[in-house]
Image (cartoon, one colour):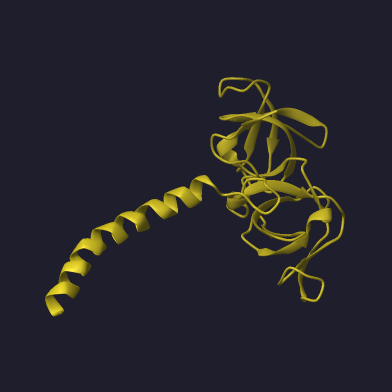
Length: 179
């Protein structure tokens, strides 16, 4: 009997190891929420005042209140009409989908805030590093994104318009392209 158990384990172990390696790859390729949209993805806050809750219902306490429409949020989970979101600082919570917009916004280099007075994100006339600088953006400035080509994003903020390097903003994924 003991020999039979050892044989079964010897046969099943490689099969289980193979399946456990395949399942996560399949799950990553099929990352879609209940809405049918991909997860994670970026959106922005639709309203000036938005409550972020500790759970997916108005029965849960408010953990944070955002006071600026257009703030970019990364949607990382869905439950019914609720979306679990993360902001540029890493704060997470739940917000009703009605308070989110598909308008793409971003924050200029939030990881550089407080690093010094002379640190800027350059906005350029064209999507290339040799193009003329049209504006110098302080880290943390919010941008409205018009399109991204995978390396550069066309954006506007406070009357300035141009292109910013995609790696210098939070609100778009590396290599992401859209119009």
